[in-house]
Structure formats: C-alpha cells, structure tokens
Length: 145
Length: 145
DNA sequence: CTTGACCTTCCAATGGTGGGAAGCCCCACC
DNA sequence: GGTGGGGCTTCCCACCATTGGAAGGTCAAG
Image 1 (cartoon, each protein chain N blue to C red):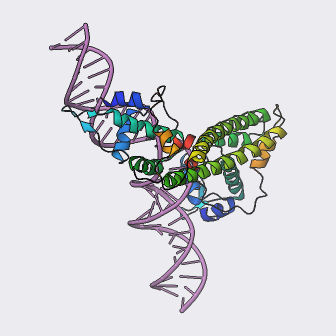
Image 2: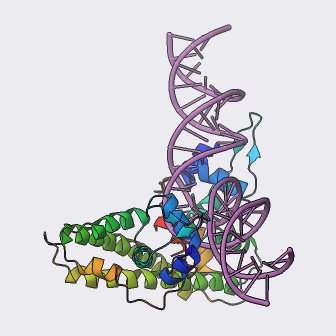
C-alpha cells in the first residue's frame, strides 16, 4: 500500500507519516523497487493509534511511550495509567490558565461600554502602571499553554 | 535606561524586546553613542502593556491592534471590545477542546485497573481499529489548540 | 588596565504541521 | 509506443513565541 492510501486509511497525512518516520516515532517503512514506501494493514493500525493519541492531546514523546507499552505484551497497565493521569493533569492546568484569562477578559469586556467613546476599561487594565511584582519571568511558550 | 533595566521593569525579557522591535510591534528604540538601546519610562509602560496582553493570551497581531487603539485618542471603545470578545471566544473554544480531551481520558483512566496486568482500556481505545470515518483532516496545530 | 557584567548582531532550535519545488514512477488511454 | 496526469521521492521554508548561544564591543568598578 502506498503512503497516500495509508494516510487515507489512518487519518494521518502523508506529510506527517514521513515526519514521524524521520523523528523515529515509527520504524522506517519498507520500500518497493520503485523506492516508494510500502505499508501493511498493521502499519495503518499503528498510525491510527498515533492519530487517536494526538486527538487526545498527547505529545510525540508521550505517544512514543504509549506505543512502546502498546507493543509490549508484558506491560503493566499501571504504567499506561500513570502516563494518562499525568497528561490529564497537564490538560487541566492548561484549561485553568485559559479559563483565568477568559474570565479576566470577560470581566473587563462586561465593564466596557463598547460605543463610540474612547474610554475603555480593557485598555485601562492593560496599560495600568500599578504592577510592581512583574519579573522578566520565563513566560511559557504559546504552544505549551 | 539600558535594555536590561527596561526588561526588569516591564517583565519582558531583553530578547523579546529586541524581537518585538525587529517584527515592528514596537518602534525602534533610541540609541546611545555606544550603540546601546535607550529606553524611557513611556517605553517601559508600553512594554508592560504588551506583557499584560500576552498574559491574557493575545497573540502579537492582536496586541498590535490593541496598541494602535491604545495610542489613538479618538478610538472607539467598541473596537477594543470587539477584539477582546473575539479573543474570549477563541479561548473558550480552546478550553472546550481541551476539556473534551481531558474528559475522554478521565473516563478511560477510571476504567483502567492500573496494576501489574497488561490489560488496559486506555491502550484498547487508542488501538481500536473500528474507526472508519477518519480522514487525513488538517488537524489544528499544537499551538493553536 | 583588567575583569566581569552588560550590550550588540546573527544564527539556530523548539513542536507539529503545511506548502512548495524539482524530479522520478506508474498506470491508463490513445 | 508515446503521453499526460497523478502519486511518490527528497529537501527546504514558514508559522508562532521564545530561548540559547557565539563572537565581539562597551562600561564601570577595582
């Protein structure tokens, strides 16, 4: 099966399949005489596993661990559970941060007249100079939030 | 004032101050004879505005709009409100997606014995082959989630 | 005058994904 | 036997925000 077909069946784009192979998340696919990658149904199954894990927000490093456990017939379910639980914590932390942002903004928006006048509590809050305890903190990267 | 001092007072790292200047978010700083950037309290104020907006999850493009409105004395608060409201919607959407992930995982974790045995509903779900309607959908980028 | 803290510019990496170019391969159709 | 179009290959670049580091100039205190 060509990479395009594997992509269709797994829901993982051909681009990403090659990428996952390049970073070692999946083993190098077999090749036909033409040089084309050749995929078996088992490979599609694995790709679908990856796709589903991505949909659940796991990052590649975690998916790697999960894949290893998946393949390991002598695995202990507690290992899987630990990874998942840790991930849930991370998700909840991100949610909490986003919710705090949204709530703060909601309050400000509710206080804003939203008319033709220039006075705006949102801008007032943003430009408020009265914030002393503000260090050049290693602010979290956007994609980690 | 040197960039280090401006960084300390604003909470924006020197690296990012230079970056914001490079991408045109802030105007080029004045220079001393030595070539060092020179910052006035007003610049620190602007940087603090940016810092606060980032903390609320605004992306640079939005911060640019907000800065322009901030500087525009004839602005209409409705413009600010609209930007903020749109941003809240985006935040809520991200929260909803993360919550769905967390809830799905929570269910799976609750069903997992978490002991020495290999049987695990989490892996079973991930590897479930019974998912036909799975297209190579243009999955959202990580930092947009 | 040296030392160390600060500043400068430039380049690279992060993570996950998409876009595109240049060139090869394969199949169906005429 | 050609030819056209679609799929495949590799390689490089972009996104977003941020950090790290190297190589070198500047400043203040000792």
